[in-house]
Image (spheres, one colour):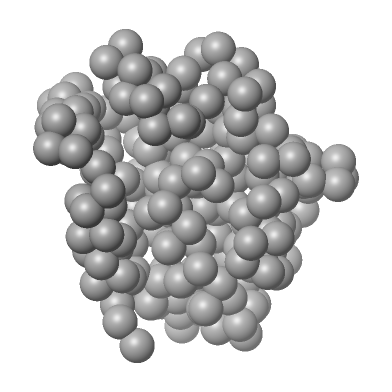
Length: 218
């Protein structure tokens, strides 16, 4: 079974065949610029308290992070949207370790700034067995230190490839979260954090499981 990193690299190789060199200059440049802002330092870290929240799933049902984490370690996965090929690859990989996470007494949820109907596409596409929640205006992602605003030239690139964030997110902010994984202990303490301004870099699912296992073994 390929590692997540290998799957992501394969995804990049495939995308390089369909996007122009100019498009890749835009992608690489925007990632470098975002990294240079030092946004990673704003992301909550291990040992800090994870903000609790209540968000709705695609059915309109409210889901409380406090209620879920009280039962055991909770993996909170922030992703950009169902349109993001890298997010799709990662979510599929995380689905593959869900049984291990639940076997250790934990659970997982995923959070996106997309509208509920758009968020539902991720669940349907991959047959996800964990909650996918809509975060209007990136309100929760903001409390985790993940939110950034796309510059005009990146908005133009997204428009050229047919991506309409205003429609999918239901606002005109042009904001996205850095993809990130947060493992939250039952008392709300962050046990493990992974967030990278380069959305092509993701945490291996095995490392998420390992963080829960370390907590379980005390």
